Length: 400
Image (tube, rainbow, N blue to C red; front, side, top):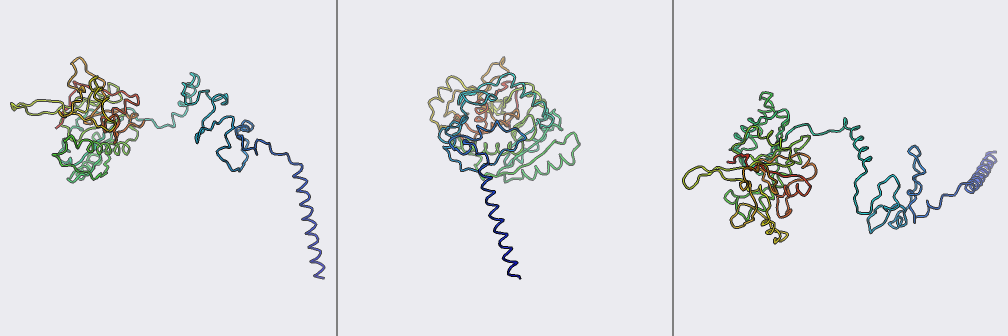
C-alpha cells in the first residue's frame, strides 16, 4: 500500500511539471517583443524613450554591458575621445542651443525665473550676516606684541557682536599660545558683554619652518618665506571663515591704526582695499621720519610691465630691494588728489576683503602666479577673477 501511494504522488508531480512548461512556452510566444532600440547598443535607449515616461512612471531597469562605442550614434551625445559633449544642433527644445565650447547668456525670461526661484528658497538659505566681520591674524613668536594687538582691537569702533576673531599660531617657541588662551578666556568668559567677540578661535598649525631673524629680509630667502606665509594664511581662512560678510587681515605687530578704520574702509565698498602702512625710523639727524613700510602694495607701470615681459616663467618678483628695480608705483608715489587708486599688489598688514572673494576660490598662492606669491599673488589672482583691488595712499597706519 505505501508503494502505490508513492508512485501515485510521483505521477502527479510529473504531470504538473509538464503542464507548467507548456504554459510558459505559449506565454512567451504571445508576449510583445522588446523594441529594437533597447537591444541595439548602437543607439541610446534612454535618449529615445525618456519622453515616454512621466515622473510617476517608474523607469524600467535594464542591465546591459555598456562600452564607449555604445553612444557613438546617439541623438544627443557626441563622442570626442573620452569626453561626452552635447550635440547642439539636436538638443531638446527645452535646453538652450549653443555651439560646442561656446557659452551664451541666458534669455531674460530664464534669468527672471532663476531669480524668482532664488527668492522662493531664500528663507531656507544661509546668507552672510550683514556687516559681520572676521579678523584673521597668523602669528609666530608674537608674545611681546600681543598686549598692543588687543589694545588696538579694543579701540575699534565696531560692534563686538558682529566681530569674530581667529588667530593661527605656527612654529612658536615663546609664550604666544599660552597668552592667547588666557586672553580668550578673559574676553569670552570674564569681560563685559560689550567686549566679547561673536567668536574667538585659536588654531595651531606648525609648518616646521625656521628662519633666523637676521635672515628674515634677505632677498634670496623671500620666496621660501613668503610661500610658508601663504600656506599659513590659506590654512587660517579656510578653517575660520563661516558666515561673515567681511574678512580683515591684520598683522600681529602693528603699532597704530585709527579706531574708525573698519567703517572707513567698508564705506568704499571695494572687494579688496588697503590703507598706507608706514614705519617710523630715525633719520641720520636723529629725527623721526615716516616712510612706507608695506612695499607689497603697488601698481604696475609701463616700465614694470616691460621688466615682467623679459622674465622667465619661474622668476620671482619681490619689492623693496635696490638690487632689483621693478619700476612699480608704491602708495607714496601718488599726488594728494588721488585718495583711492587701483592696485595690482597688496600686503597683509591691514587688508579688508569681501568674504565672497575668498569663497570664490581666491586665496594666497603658494606657487608662482604671474611671478608673485602670498599677498601680492592674492591681489593678482583676485584681479584675474574680475575683482577690484584698491589702496588709499593718504590713509595711514603704522607698523612697529
